[in-house]
Image (cartoon, rainbow, N blue to C red; front, side):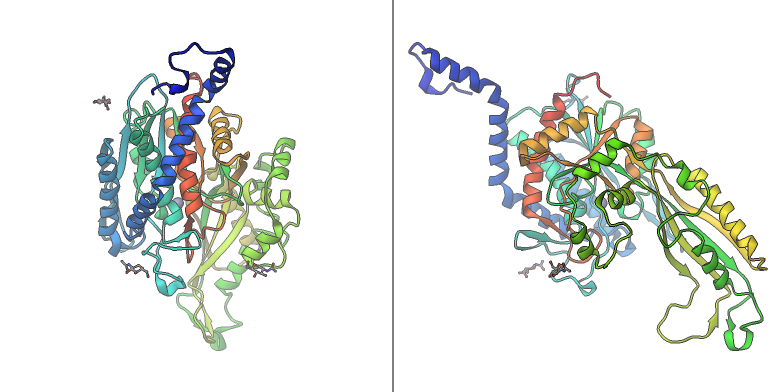
Length: 505
Ligand SMILES: *[C@@H]1O[C@H](CO)[C@@H](O)[C@H](O)[C@H]1NC(C)=O
Ligand SMILES: *[C@@H]1O[C@H](CO)[C@@H](O)[C@H](O)[C@H]1NC(C)=O
Ligand SMILES: *[C@@H]1O[C@H](CO)[C@@H](O)[C@H](O)[C@H]1NC(C)=O
Ligand SMILES: [Zn+2]
Protein backbone atom coordinates (compact mmCIF):
# COMPACT_ATOMS: atom_id res chain seq x y z
CA UNK A 1 0.00 0.00 0.00
CA UNK A 2 1.25 3.52 -0.82
CA UNK A 3 1.97 5.86 2.06
CA UNK A 4 -0.57 8.65 2.41
CA UNK A 5 0.91 11.79 0.86
CA UNK A 6 0.33 13.95 3.94
CA UNK A 7 3.57 12.67 5.47
CA UNK A 8 5.81 12.46 2.45
CA UNK A 9 8.99 14.52 2.10
CA UNK A 10 8.98 17.02 4.97
CA UNK A 11 10.25 16.01 8.34
CA UNK A 12 7.50 14.64 10.50
CA UNK A 13 6.50 16.63 13.52
CA UNK A 14 6.13 14.65 16.77
CA UNK A 15 2.35 14.93 16.71
CA UNK A 16 2.10 13.34 13.28
CA UNK A 17 4.45 10.60 14.41
CA UNK A 18 2.28 9.95 17.45
CA UNK A 19 -0.81 9.81 15.30
CA UNK A 20 0.79 7.26 12.99
CA UNK A 21 1.93 5.16 15.92
CA UNK A 22 -1.59 5.20 17.33
CA UNK A 23 -3.05 4.19 13.99
CA UNK A 24 -0.60 1.34 13.29
CA UNK A 25 -2.30 -1.34 15.40
CA UNK A 26 -5.53 -0.44 13.61
CA UNK A 27 -4.10 -1.61 10.29
CA UNK A 28 -6.03 -4.91 10.61
CA UNK A 29 -9.24 -3.17 11.55
CA UNK A 30 -8.80 -0.98 8.52
CA UNK A 31 -8.55 -4.04 6.33
CA UNK A 32 -11.65 -5.47 7.88
CA UNK A 33 -13.51 -2.28 7.15
CA UNK A 34 -12.40 -2.54 3.55
CA UNK A 35 -13.60 -6.10 3.38
CA UNK A 36 -16.91 -5.22 5.01
CA UNK A 37 -17.40 -2.51 2.40
CA UNK A 38 -16.59 -5.00 -0.32
CA UNK A 39 -19.28 -7.32 1.07
CA UNK A 40 -21.83 -4.52 1.27
CA UNK A 41 -21.21 -3.49 -2.29
CA UNK A 42 -21.51 -7.08 -3.57
CA UNK A 43 -24.63 -8.06 -1.71
CA UNK A 44 -26.86 -8.15 -4.77
CA UNK A 45 -24.48 -10.65 -6.30
CA UNK A 46 -24.69 -12.75 -3.12
CA UNK A 47 -28.48 -12.67 -3.15
CA UNK A 48 -28.44 -13.76 -6.82
CA UNK A 49 -26.13 -16.65 -5.93
CA UNK A 50 -28.60 -17.70 -3.25
CA UNK A 51 -31.46 -17.39 -5.73
CA UNK A 52 -29.65 -19.74 -8.13
CA UNK A 53 -29.07 -22.30 -5.40
CA UNK A 54 -32.57 -22.13 -3.95
CA UNK A 55 -33.97 -22.70 -7.46
CA UNK A 56 -32.40 -26.16 -7.49
CA UNK A 57 -34.85 -28.53 -5.79
CA UNK A 58 -32.20 -30.49 -3.95
CA UNK A 59 -34.67 -32.39 -1.76
CA UNK A 60 -32.74 -35.40 -0.48
CA UNK A 61 -35.83 -37.23 0.76
CA UNK A 62 -37.52 -37.37 -2.64
CA UNK A 63 -36.06 -39.99 -4.99
CA UNK A 64 -37.59 -38.19 -7.98
CA UNK A 65 -35.45 -35.15 -7.15
CA UNK A 66 -32.21 -37.11 -7.03
CA UNK A 67 -31.05 -35.72 -10.43
CA UNK A 68 -31.53 -32.18 -9.04
CA UNK A 69 -29.48 -33.16 -6.02
CA UNK A 70 -26.64 -34.49 -8.21
CA UNK A 71 -26.83 -31.24 -10.18
CA UNK A 72 -26.66 -29.22 -6.96
CA UNK A 73 -23.40 -30.91 -5.95
CA UNK A 74 -21.95 -30.19 -9.41
CA UNK A 75 -22.92 -26.54 -9.09
CA UNK A 76 -21.19 -26.28 -5.72
CA UNK A 77 -18.06 -27.99 -7.06
CA UNK A 78 -17.97 -25.76 -10.12
CA UNK A 79 -18.29 -22.59 -8.05
CA UNK A 80 -15.36 -23.63 -5.87
CA UNK A 81 -13.30 -24.68 -8.90
CA UNK A 82 -13.83 -21.31 -10.55
CA UNK A 83 -12.44 -19.70 -7.41
CA UNK A 84 -9.26 -21.72 -7.83
CA UNK A 85 -9.91 -24.29 -5.13
CA UNK A 86 -8.60 -27.82 -5.31
CA UNK A 87 -11.96 -29.55 -5.63
CA UNK A 88 -13.09 -33.15 -5.58
CA UNK A 89 -16.47 -34.77 -5.95
CA UNK A 90 -16.14 -37.76 -3.67
CA UNK A 91 -18.19 -40.83 -4.55
CA UNK A 92 -19.78 -42.15 -1.37
CA UNK A 93 -21.64 -45.05 -2.95
CA UNK A 94 -25.29 -45.97 -3.04
CA UNK A 95 -28.28 -46.22 -0.79
CA UNK A 96 -30.89 -48.96 -0.70
CA UNK A 97 -34.47 -47.77 -0.29
CA UNK A 98 -36.98 -49.75 1.82
CA UNK A 99 -38.51 -51.07 -1.44
CA UNK A 100 -35.16 -52.47 -2.52
CA UNK A 101 -34.43 -49.77 -5.10
CA UNK A 102 -30.76 -48.81 -5.34
CA UNK A 103 -29.98 -45.13 -5.73
CA UNK A 104 -26.63 -43.34 -6.12
CA UNK A 105 -25.88 -41.02 -3.21
CA UNK A 106 -25.01 -37.43 -4.11
CA UNK A 107 -21.25 -36.99 -4.16
CA UNK A 108 -19.61 -35.05 -1.33
CA UNK A 109 -17.74 -31.93 -2.42
CA UNK A 110 -14.37 -31.36 -0.81
CA UNK A 111 -12.32 -28.28 -1.58
CA UNK A 112 -9.14 -26.64 -0.43
CA UNK A 113 -7.95 -23.06 -0.55
CA UNK A 114 -4.35 -22.55 0.50
CA UNK A 115 -1.85 -25.10 1.72
CA UNK A 116 0.61 -23.00 3.70
CA UNK A 117 1.82 -25.26 6.50
CA UNK A 118 2.73 -22.27 8.64
CA UNK A 119 -0.98 -21.43 8.89
CA UNK A 120 -3.87 -23.12 10.64
CA UNK A 121 -6.26 -25.11 8.49
CA UNK A 122 -9.97 -24.90 9.14
CA UNK A 123 -12.57 -27.15 7.57
CA UNK A 124 -16.05 -25.76 7.02
CA UNK A 125 -18.84 -28.30 6.94
CA UNK A 126 -22.20 -27.56 5.33
CA UNK A 127 -25.01 -29.16 3.37
CA UNK A 128 -26.94 -28.11 0.29
CA UNK A 129 -29.80 -30.60 0.36
CA UNK A 130 -33.16 -29.42 1.65
CA UNK A 131 -36.38 -30.61 3.24
CA UNK A 132 -39.41 -31.10 0.98
CA UNK A 133 -41.53 -28.03 0.17
CA UNK A 134 -44.63 -27.42 -1.90
CA UNK A 135 -46.59 -24.23 -2.42
CA UNK A 136 -49.72 -26.16 -1.32
CA UNK A 137 -48.13 -26.84 2.08
CA UNK A 138 -48.99 -23.26 2.99
CA UNK A 139 -46.12 -21.24 1.54
CA UNK A 140 -46.94 -17.64 0.69
CA UNK A 141 -44.45 -17.72 -2.19
CA UNK A 142 -43.01 -20.38 -4.50
CA UNK A 143 -40.53 -22.16 -2.18
CA UNK A 144 -37.99 -22.57 -4.98
CA UNK A 145 -38.19 -19.01 -6.24
CA UNK A 146 -36.29 -16.84 -3.76
CA UNK A 147 -38.55 -13.93 -2.91
CA UNK A 148 -37.57 -10.89 -0.86
CA UNK A 149 -40.20 -9.36 1.40
CA UNK A 150 -39.24 -6.73 3.98
CA UNK A 151 -35.60 -7.75 3.94
CA UNK A 152 -36.37 -11.45 4.33
CA UNK A 153 -35.32 -13.86 1.60
CA UNK A 154 -37.96 -16.58 1.47
CA UNK A 155 -37.12 -19.94 -0.06
CA UNK A 156 -36.64 -23.58 0.88
CA UNK A 157 -33.10 -24.16 2.11
CA UNK A 158 -32.34 -20.44 2.28
CA UNK A 159 -31.37 -20.62 5.96
CA UNK A 160 -30.86 -24.38 6.20
CA UNK A 161 -28.17 -24.42 4.93
CA UNK A 162 -27.58 -22.77 1.55
CA UNK A 163 -27.02 -19.14 2.61
CA UNK A 164 -24.56 -20.08 5.38
CA UNK A 165 -22.57 -22.26 2.94
CA UNK A 166 -22.56 -19.42 0.41
CA UNK A 167 -21.55 -16.92 3.09
CA UNK A 168 -18.45 -19.03 3.79
CA UNK A 169 -17.67 -19.15 0.07
CA UNK A 170 -18.17 -15.38 -0.25
CA UNK A 171 -15.87 -14.87 2.76
CA UNK A 172 -13.06 -16.69 0.98
CA UNK A 173 -13.97 -14.89 -2.25
CA UNK A 174 -13.69 -11.49 -0.58
CA UNK A 175 -10.11 -12.19 0.54
CA UNK A 176 -9.29 -13.27 -3.01
CA UNK A 177 -10.97 -10.30 -4.68
CA UNK A 178 -9.08 -7.83 -2.52
CA UNK A 179 -5.80 -9.71 -3.04
CA UNK A 180 -5.47 -10.36 0.65
CA UNK A 181 -3.80 -13.55 1.75
CA UNK A 182 -6.19 -16.00 3.36
CA UNK A 183 -5.17 -15.86 7.03
CA UNK A 184 -5.75 -19.62 7.37
CA UNK A 185 -6.03 -22.47 4.88
CA UNK A 186 -9.71 -23.17 4.27
CA UNK A 187 -11.18 -26.54 3.39
CA UNK A 188 -14.80 -27.34 2.64
CA UNK A 189 -16.83 -30.50 3.09
CA UNK A 190 -20.27 -30.02 1.55
CA UNK A 191 -22.74 -32.87 1.53
CA UNK A 192 -26.16 -33.52 0.03
CA UNK A 193 -27.82 -36.00 2.40
CA UNK A 194 -27.96 -34.14 5.71
CA UNK A 195 -31.73 -33.87 5.89
CA UNK A 196 -32.11 -37.63 5.67
CA UNK A 197 -29.32 -38.64 8.03
CA UNK A 198 -26.04 -37.97 6.19
CA UNK A 199 -25.89 -41.42 4.60
CA UNK A 200 -22.35 -42.29 3.62
CA UNK A 201 -20.70 -39.29 5.23
CA UNK A 202 -19.42 -41.04 8.36
CA UNK A 203 -17.66 -43.63 6.20
CA UNK A 204 -16.20 -40.91 3.98
CA UNK A 205 -14.81 -39.01 6.98
CA UNK A 206 -13.34 -42.21 8.35
CA UNK A 207 -11.80 -43.10 4.98
CA UNK A 208 -10.21 -39.66 4.58
CA UNK A 209 -9.11 -39.30 8.18
CA UNK A 210 -5.44 -39.58 7.24
CA UNK A 211 -5.68 -37.73 3.94
CA UNK A 212 -8.09 -34.81 3.51
CA UNK A 213 -8.60 -34.34 7.25
CA UNK A 214 -5.02 -35.01 8.37
CA UNK A 215 -3.90 -31.38 8.34
CA UNK A 216 -7.21 -29.91 9.52
CA UNK A 217 -6.85 -28.11 12.86
CA UNK A 218 -10.43 -26.99 13.47
CA UNK A 219 -13.87 -27.82 12.18
CA UNK A 220 -16.52 -25.16 11.71
CA UNK A 221 -20.24 -25.84 11.34
CA UNK A 222 -22.82 -23.15 10.58
CA UNK A 223 -25.95 -25.29 10.42
CA UNK A 224 -28.14 -23.85 13.18
CA UNK A 225 -29.54 -20.48 14.23
CA UNK A 226 -29.43 -17.76 16.84
CA UNK A 227 -31.77 -17.90 19.82
CA UNK A 228 -32.87 -14.28 19.65
CA UNK A 229 -31.81 -11.18 17.76
CA UNK A 230 -28.47 -11.39 19.47
CA UNK A 231 -25.71 -13.30 17.61
CA UNK A 232 -24.76 -16.61 19.17
CA UNK A 233 -22.11 -19.29 19.28
CA UNK A 234 -23.37 -22.83 19.75
CA UNK A 235 -21.41 -25.16 22.01
CA UNK A 236 -23.61 -28.21 22.37
CA UNK A 237 -26.22 -30.33 20.69
CA UNK A 238 -28.34 -33.13 22.09
CA UNK A 239 -28.12 -36.62 20.67
CA UNK A 240 -31.11 -38.84 20.06
CA UNK A 241 -32.10 -42.45 20.68
CA UNK A 242 -35.13 -43.43 18.63
CA UNK A 243 -37.16 -46.49 19.66
CA UNK A 244 -39.82 -48.74 18.18
CA UNK A 245 -42.00 -50.66 20.65
CA UNK A 246 -44.04 -53.25 18.79
CA UNK A 247 -46.95 -55.02 20.48
CA UNK A 248 -48.41 -57.94 18.59
CA UNK A 249 -51.52 -59.87 19.53
CA UNK A 250 -54.30 -61.44 17.44
CA UNK A 251 -53.36 -62.78 14.01
CA UNK A 252 -55.47 -60.10 12.30
CA UNK A 253 -57.41 -56.90 13.03
CA UNK A 254 -60.69 -57.59 14.88
CA UNK A 255 -64.14 -55.98 15.16
CA UNK A 256 -64.59 -54.42 18.59
CA UNK A 257 -68.32 -55.24 18.64
CA UNK A 258 -67.64 -58.91 18.06
CA UNK A 259 -64.33 -59.45 19.90
CA UNK A 260 -64.11 -56.45 22.25
CA UNK A 261 -64.03 -57.70 25.85
CA UNK A 262 -62.73 -61.12 24.93
CA UNK A 263 -59.16 -60.36 23.80
CA UNK A 264 -56.39 -58.37 25.44
CA UNK A 265 -55.80 -55.53 23.05
CA UNK A 266 -52.28 -54.67 21.81
CA UNK A 267 -53.14 -50.96 21.64
CA UNK A 268 -54.15 -50.86 25.32
CA UNK A 269 -50.88 -52.56 26.24
CA UNK A 270 -48.90 -50.15 24.11
CA UNK A 271 -50.57 -47.03 25.50
CA UNK A 272 -49.95 -48.40 28.99
CA UNK A 273 -46.24 -48.85 28.50
CA UNK A 274 -45.81 -45.57 26.60
CA UNK A 275 -47.50 -43.79 29.47
CA UNK A 276 -44.91 -45.18 31.87
CA UNK A 277 -42.02 -43.38 30.16
CA UNK A 278 -42.51 -39.85 31.43
CA UNK A 279 -44.67 -38.20 34.09
CA UNK A 280 -47.06 -35.32 33.35
CA UNK A 281 -44.52 -32.93 34.89
CA UNK A 282 -41.77 -34.12 32.55
CA UNK A 283 -39.94 -36.52 34.86
CA UNK A 284 -38.39 -39.43 32.96
CA UNK A 285 -39.34 -42.63 34.79
CA UNK A 286 -36.87 -45.03 33.19
CA UNK A 287 -34.45 -46.04 35.96
CA UNK A 288 -30.88 -44.85 35.49
CA UNK A 289 -31.50 -42.15 32.92
CA UNK A 290 -31.70 -39.14 35.19
CA UNK A 291 -28.76 -40.41 37.24
CA UNK A 292 -26.53 -40.43 34.15
CA UNK A 293 -27.01 -36.74 33.39
CA UNK A 294 -24.09 -34.42 34.16
CA UNK A 295 -25.12 -32.11 37.01
CA UNK A 296 -25.87 -28.46 36.27
CA UNK A 297 -22.95 -26.34 37.46
CA UNK A 298 -23.17 -22.87 38.98
CA UNK A 299 -21.28 -21.53 35.97
CA UNK A 300 -23.81 -22.97 33.59
CA UNK A 301 -26.66 -21.58 35.63
CA UNK A 302 -25.03 -18.18 35.42
CA UNK A 303 -24.57 -18.51 31.67
CA UNK A 304 -28.24 -19.31 31.17
CA UNK A 305 -29.18 -16.30 33.28
CA UNK A 306 -27.32 -14.00 30.89
CA UNK A 307 -28.89 -15.35 27.71
CA UNK A 308 -31.39 -13.21 25.86
CA UNK A 309 -34.58 -15.24 25.77
CA UNK A 310 -38.16 -14.17 26.22
CA UNK A 311 -40.59 -16.74 27.62
CA UNK A 312 -43.68 -14.85 26.46
CA UNK A 313 -42.34 -14.67 22.90
CA UNK A 314 -41.56 -18.33 23.00
CA UNK A 315 -45.08 -19.16 24.15
CA UNK A 316 -46.46 -17.04 21.35
CA UNK A 317 -44.20 -18.69 18.78
CA UNK A 318 -45.23 -22.17 19.88
CA UNK A 319 -48.85 -21.24 20.44
CA UNK A 320 -49.11 -22.68 23.94
CA UNK A 321 -50.55 -21.01 27.04
CA UNK A 322 -48.27 -22.76 29.54
CA UNK A 323 -44.78 -24.19 29.32
CA UNK A 324 -43.27 -27.07 31.27
CA UNK A 325 -41.21 -24.56 33.32
CA UNK A 326 -42.01 -20.95 34.03
CA UNK A 327 -38.50 -19.54 34.37
CA UNK A 328 -35.82 -19.01 31.77
CA UNK A 329 -33.03 -21.08 33.30
CA UNK A 330 -35.15 -24.20 33.84
CA UNK A 331 -36.66 -23.93 30.41
CA UNK A 332 -33.34 -23.46 28.59
CA UNK A 333 -31.77 -26.23 30.64
CA UNK A 334 -34.55 -28.63 29.69
CA UNK A 335 -34.31 -27.66 26.03
CA UNK A 336 -30.56 -28.13 25.89
CA UNK A 337 -28.94 -30.09 28.69
CA UNK A 338 -31.50 -32.50 30.09
CA UNK A 339 -32.92 -35.51 28.28
CA UNK A 340 -36.55 -35.71 27.33
CA UNK A 341 -38.97 -38.27 25.96
CA UNK A 342 -41.16 -37.46 22.96
CA UNK A 343 -43.82 -39.85 21.68
CA UNK A 344 -44.08 -39.47 17.92
CA UNK A 345 -46.67 -41.88 16.64
CA UNK A 346 -48.23 -45.30 16.50
CA UNK A 347 -47.89 -47.31 13.33
CA UNK A 348 -50.80 -49.65 12.71
CA UNK A 349 -53.25 -47.54 14.69
CA UNK A 350 -56.43 -46.27 13.11
CA UNK A 351 -55.76 -42.63 12.25
CA UNK A 352 -58.17 -41.75 9.43
CA UNK A 353 -61.22 -39.55 9.89
CA UNK A 354 -64.35 -41.45 10.87
CA UNK A 355 -65.27 -44.02 13.48
CA UNK A 356 -63.83 -47.36 12.48
CA UNK A 357 -64.43 -49.84 15.33
CA UNK A 358 -61.26 -51.79 14.85
CA UNK A 359 -59.01 -53.61 17.31
CA UNK A 360 -55.61 -53.33 15.62
CA UNK A 361 -53.73 -56.63 15.76
CA UNK A 362 -50.25 -55.15 15.80
CA UNK A 363 -49.16 -51.64 16.71
CA UNK A 364 -45.73 -50.03 16.89
CA UNK A 365 -45.19 -47.08 19.20
CA UNK A 366 -42.44 -44.67 18.14
CA UNK A 367 -40.66 -42.46 20.61
CA UNK A 368 -37.27 -40.91 21.11
CA UNK A 369 -35.13 -39.75 23.98
CA UNK A 370 -32.88 -36.74 23.44
CA UNK A 371 -29.38 -37.49 24.70
CA UNK A 372 -27.12 -35.27 26.78
CA UNK A 373 -23.75 -35.67 28.48
CA UNK A 374 -23.01 -38.19 30.09
CA UNK A 375 -25.62 -40.52 28.63
CA UNK A 376 -24.49 -43.38 26.44
CA UNK A 377 -26.90 -44.63 23.75
CA UNK A 378 -25.78 -48.23 24.23
CA UNK A 379 -26.65 -48.05 27.93
CA UNK A 380 -29.89 -46.18 27.22
CA UNK A 381 -30.93 -48.94 24.84
CA UNK A 382 -30.62 -51.53 27.62
CA UNK A 383 -32.28 -49.28 30.20
CA UNK A 384 -35.30 -48.62 28.00
CA UNK A 385 -35.66 -52.19 26.79
CA UNK A 386 -35.43 -53.65 30.31
CA UNK A 387 -37.81 -51.07 31.74
CA UNK A 388 -40.48 -51.50 29.07
CA UNK A 389 -40.33 -55.28 29.41
CA UNK A 390 -40.71 -55.01 33.17
CA UNK A 391 -43.70 -52.64 32.90
CA UNK A 392 -45.21 -54.85 30.23
CA UNK A 393 -44.56 -57.94 32.35
CA UNK A 394 -46.69 -56.52 35.18
CA UNK A 395 -49.64 -56.36 32.78
CA UNK A 396 -49.55 -60.17 32.43
CA UNK A 397 -50.54 -59.77 28.82
CA UNK A 398 -50.31 -62.68 26.36
CA UNK A 399 -49.32 -60.24 23.62
CA UNK A 400 -45.72 -60.02 22.43
CA UNK A 401 -43.56 -56.94 22.97
CA UNK A 402 -40.49 -56.21 20.85
CA UNK A 403 -38.36 -53.13 21.60
CA UNK A 404 -35.71 -51.90 19.19
CA UNK A 405 -33.51 -48.82 19.01
CA UNK A 406 -33.26 -47.59 15.42
CA UNK A 407 -31.16 -44.44 15.90
CA UNK A 408 -28.49 -43.94 18.57
CA UNK A 409 -26.87 -40.53 18.10
CA UNK A 410 -24.60 -39.17 20.81
CA UNK A 411 -24.68 -35.60 22.12
CA UNK A 412 -21.90 -33.14 21.39
CA UNK A 413 -20.45 -30.57 23.76
CA UNK A 414 -17.57 -28.13 23.27
CA UNK A 415 -15.42 -26.27 25.76
CA UNK A 416 -16.44 -22.63 25.58
CA UNK A 417 -13.06 -21.59 27.01
CA UNK A 418 -11.29 -23.01 23.95
CA UNK A 419 -9.45 -20.43 21.80
CA UNK A 420 -11.84 -21.28 18.93
CA UNK A 421 -14.68 -19.83 20.99
CA UNK A 422 -12.57 -16.88 22.14
CA UNK A 423 -11.95 -16.18 18.45
CA UNK A 424 -15.68 -16.45 17.83
CA UNK A 425 -16.46 -13.94 20.57
CA UNK A 426 -13.89 -11.51 19.16
CA UNK A 427 -15.30 -11.85 15.63
CA UNK A 428 -18.88 -11.30 16.82
CA UNK A 429 -17.74 -8.23 18.71
CA UNK A 430 -15.97 -6.88 15.67
CA UNK A 431 -19.02 -7.21 13.40
CA UNK A 432 -21.96 -6.70 15.75
CA UNK A 433 -20.44 -4.80 18.67
CA UNK A 434 -21.95 -7.19 21.22
CA UNK A 435 -20.89 -10.34 23.02
CA UNK A 436 -22.52 -13.43 21.55
CA UNK A 437 -24.93 -15.56 23.54
CA UNK A 438 -23.39 -18.96 24.21
CA UNK A 439 -26.15 -21.40 23.41
CA UNK A 440 -26.87 -25.04 22.79
CA UNK A 441 -29.15 -26.75 20.31
CA UNK A 442 -31.85 -29.05 21.57
CA UNK A 443 -31.69 -30.90 18.27
CA UNK A 444 -29.09 -33.27 16.94
CA UNK A 445 -26.29 -32.60 14.44
CA UNK A 446 -24.75 -36.09 14.46
CA UNK A 447 -21.91 -35.14 12.16
CA UNK A 448 -20.39 -32.90 14.87
CA UNK A 449 -19.87 -35.90 17.08
CA UNK A 450 -18.49 -37.95 14.18
CA UNK A 451 -15.97 -35.23 13.33
CA UNK A 452 -14.94 -35.07 16.97
CA UNK A 453 -14.62 -38.83 17.42
CA UNK A 454 -12.94 -39.60 14.09
CA UNK A 455 -10.63 -36.62 13.59
CA UNK A 456 -10.08 -35.69 17.24
CA UNK A 457 -10.27 -32.02 16.21
CA UNK A 458 -12.03 -29.21 18.02
CA UNK A 459 -15.29 -28.01 16.59
CA UNK A 460 -17.14 -24.73 16.75
CA UNK A 461 -20.65 -23.99 15.60
CA UNK A 462 -21.13 -20.43 14.36
CA UNK A 463 -24.72 -19.87 13.31
CA UNK A 464 -25.82 -16.94 11.20
CA UNK A 465 -29.47 -17.95 10.72
CA UNK A 466 -32.16 -16.01 12.59
CA UNK A 467 -34.22 -17.43 15.47
CA UNK A 468 -37.39 -17.21 13.38
CA UNK A 469 -36.15 -18.61 10.06
CA UNK A 470 -38.68 -21.46 10.00
CA UNK A 471 -36.28 -24.29 9.20
CA UNK A 472 -38.04 -27.38 7.86
CA UNK A 473 -41.35 -25.53 7.89
CA UNK A 474 -43.40 -23.30 5.60
CA UNK A 475 -42.03 -19.91 4.58
CA UNK A 476 -38.43 -20.66 5.49
CA UNK A 477 -36.34 -17.51 5.11
CA UNK A 478 -32.91 -16.04 5.55
CA UNK A 479 -32.75 -12.35 6.38
CA UNK A 480 -30.62 -10.27 4.07
CA UNK A 481 -29.10 -8.74 7.21
CA UNK A 482 -28.05 -12.11 8.62
CA UNK A 483 -26.71 -13.27 5.25
CA UNK A 484 -24.61 -10.17 4.63
CA UNK A 485 -23.44 -9.52 8.19
CA UNK A 486 -22.89 -13.28 8.50
CA UNK A 487 -20.48 -13.12 5.57
CA UNK A 488 -18.58 -10.35 7.38
CA UNK A 489 -18.59 -12.46 10.53
CA UNK A 490 -16.93 -15.34 8.68
CA UNK A 491 -14.35 -12.97 7.19
CA UNK A 492 -13.55 -11.67 10.67
CA UNK A 493 -13.55 -15.16 12.11
CA UNK A 494 -10.92 -16.48 9.70
CA UNK A 495 -8.69 -13.63 10.78
CA UNK A 496 -9.29 -14.32 14.48
CA UNK A 497 -8.57 -18.02 14.09
CA UNK A 498 -5.24 -17.23 12.42
CA UNK A 499 -4.16 -15.62 15.68
CA UNK A 500 -4.68 -18.72 17.80
CA UNK A 501 -1.35 -20.03 19.06
CA UNK A 502 -0.22 -23.04 17.08
CA UNK A 503 -0.12 -25.26 20.19
CA UNK A 504 -3.88 -25.28 20.78
CA UNK A 505 -5.73 -28.41 19.68
C1 LIG B 1 -0.36 -25.60 -2.86
O1 LIG B 1 -0.92 -24.41 -3.36
C2 LIG B 1 -0.25 -23.91 -4.49
C3 LIG B 1 -0.83 -22.56 -4.81
O2 LIG B 1 -2.23 -22.60 -4.72
C4 LIG B 1 -0.36 -24.91 -5.63
O3 LIG B 1 0.32 -24.44 -6.75
C5 LIG B 1 0.19 -26.25 -5.18
O4 LIG B 1 -0.04 -27.22 -6.16
C6 LIG B 1 -0.45 -26.69 -3.91
N1 LIG B 1 0.17 -27.91 -3.42
C7 LIG B 1 -0.52 -28.93 -2.97
C8 LIG B 1 0.28 -30.05 -2.45
O5 LIG B 1 -1.73 -28.93 -2.94
C1 LIG C 1 -40.24 -15.87 -9.47
O1 LIG C 1 -41.17 -14.96 -8.96
C2 LIG C 1 -41.16 -13.71 -9.64
C3 LIG C 1 -42.08 -12.77 -8.89
O2 LIG C 1 -43.32 -13.34 -8.65
C4 LIG C 1 -41.59 -13.92 -11.08
O3 LIG C 1 -41.55 -12.71 -11.76
C5 LIG C 1 -40.62 -14.91 -11.72
O4 LIG C 1 -41.04 -15.20 -13.04
C6 LIG C 1 -40.53 -16.18 -10.93
N1 LIG C 1 -39.48 -17.01 -11.46
C7 LIG C 1 -39.64 -18.28 -11.73
C8 LIG C 1 -38.44 -18.99 -12.27
O5 LIG C 1 -40.69 -18.87 -11.53
C1 LIG D 1 -48.29 -13.20 19.19
O1 LIG D 1 -47.62 -12.65 18.07
C2 LIG D 1 -48.49 -12.17 17.08
C3 LIG D 1 -47.66 -11.79 15.86
O2 LIG D 1 -46.48 -11.14 16.21
C4 LIG D 1 -49.30 -11.01 17.65
O3 LIG D 1 -50.17 -10.51 16.68
C5 LIG D 1 -50.08 -11.53 18.85
O4 LIG D 1 -50.77 -10.46 19.45
C6 LIG D 1 -49.17 -12.18 19.87
N1 LIG D 1 -49.98 -12.82 20.90
C7 LIG D 1 -49.68 -12.72 22.18
C8 LIG D 1 -50.59 -13.46 23.09
O5 LIG D 1 -48.73 -12.11 22.60
ZN1 LIG E 1 -29.30 -28.05 8.23
